[in-house]
Amino acid sequence: PDEIAEVVAWAATKPNLHLVSDELYALSVFGKDAKFTSVMGEVRDYPELRDQRTHVVWAFSKDFGASGFRVGAIHTRNHAVHDAFANLAYFSAVPNPVQLSFAELIDDEEFVEHYVKENKRR
Image (cartoon, rainbow, N blue to C red; front, side, top):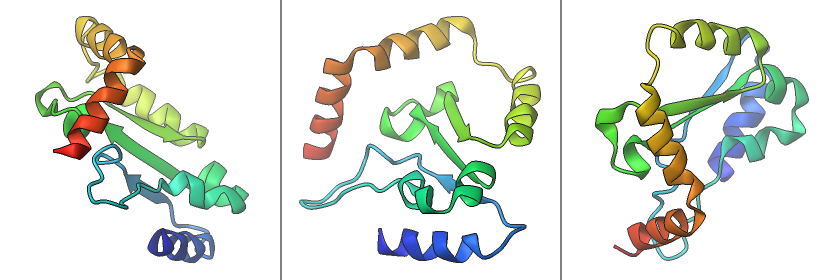
């Protein structure tokens, strides 16, 4: 967390720099006291950086062992970045049956909680 806060503070001073956080292992943090910290929690005090220049990517590949499916998401508040990804998605859309399967997976909160807990235990 301290390292992330330092990077965020530094990035906030660079008006042409976008901060892209790869959070593919967000649910797979190991160690007795290990805790994941998202960059989104650190940019809250920097509105311009948060709203225009911070982008977070996450996918099912690492946390759910589903690398072959190529299912993920980007979180951004920047409309231009969002629109660019929306245009690209047209050419690389995830098939509807796969979308439905993963939507049902994460909708099962009991399963997800158990899966993450068991994954950390192992």
